[in-house]
Image (cartoon, rainbow, N blue to C red):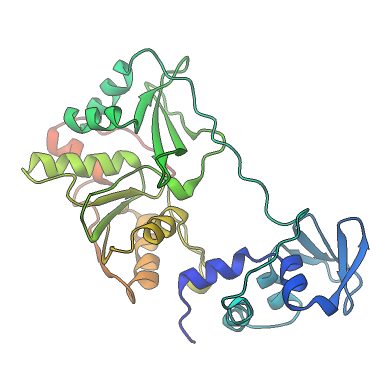
Length: 317
């Protein structure tokens, strides 16, 4: 089976059926009424609101890729190659009324008058006070009001907040602010580095940075990136999507040559690591470094410092 770059798969998945037909197979497109279309070949196949449904067969989907596989009978790799050949260097014209939903604006929780509780919580997880202060001073971390959650932000390349992870202080609450975009998850970038270290959660990222500082190493020497949760590849790797945060980060940092995977040392983390190695090893030097003690880097840090390990849930960010 030919190898297809994850970037090509992601781009192919993004192309909705209406846009595909309008740009590359317009003679097969028939307008039914309003924003509803069908195809000449299958008049019971309706396209509307960014989705398509072949009612006579009871199948449907969103993308042109789904259509080519389920209706035209193409194999997955054949369908991806077909779409990429169609796209080439062409400018795609999107229908003004359909397809992609508008991006939701990030709604940030109101900031508390101080960050004392958030700082105390992070210290209780073993995170170094200087690293916490750095994150507070650079706007990456603050304490919300009135719920007093720790808010950990991710920014786009213009320094605009685009993602916010919320973590309860003294509770098991974990969540994301409305409008959070996982492409811009919590991260700390280095000024000059060809290496990025990948973690499932912001807490693990900060724990690793703390361990470097404890060992007398520079904690901000390389890029540090959280995936904002567990990456769950499909059983068939060829059908797997790529972590949005990692895709975005690599697209903005062409200098990256080395990727160090520091995902959780459990079944989900190991599966995710193997999948990412499969996708990345052709272009990057990829190494895996699971925590040597405990489930993740925060466990390892707490054990190292003699701090009780916090009970975590499988989808901790």
